[in-house]
Length: 251
Image (tube, rainbow, N blue to C red; front, side):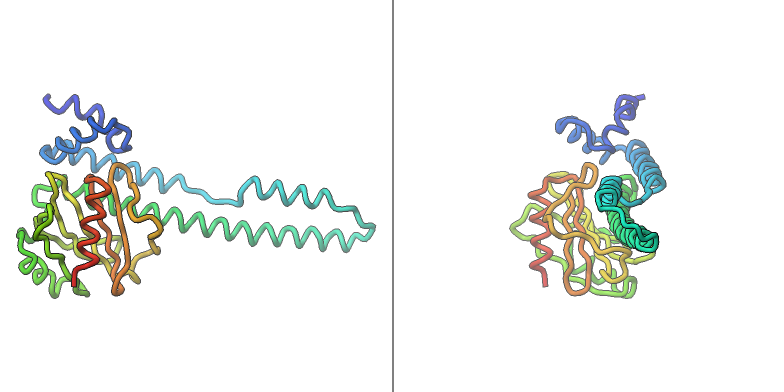
């Protein structure tokens, strides 16, 4: 079959480990081949499930070792009661730090899961034969289509004098949270812009880095007016940042 050569590289592609030339060629192929796009989505979902199942959290071994060494270094007291108090205090410290470490680990895992789910939503649009529920390049057609379908409103940017074009939009869900999924294109690269009520998301997303990497995609996210905006695609970080800037200036 024509796609056999591509399918042997699917796992490497999903992990973002192909060289840049092969990654670009594979992106182009996935945009035009529903079979490979569907297989890529299945692998992404399987890897996410395995990653989530393997998450376990505990206090850091280095921290436990430091606590044990500090206890051993203190002079022994003849009072048995004092020894029990010291041991109890140490155990309490370990319990508190262990809980804090576990909580931070849980937050980090949930954040990774949210970004993974966002990447899945984007890949699903590439695999779908009907990526948009409303097909239009006119923002004045796409925006009104969402009225009554989602519990919020948003503004779309003016694209004149830019290299971006609006392809359409669809309703989407991140977990149980309904949102808007806008689809843009720049130089044959598809970009998804997802908008959700920020307070309804399961975790607060990090905004310290303007553009981050999620698998083979560039991602930028920010909060404005109680809404969470997420821009993701295989376009360059510069293009992701430029489209994000247009959204930030909209309205």
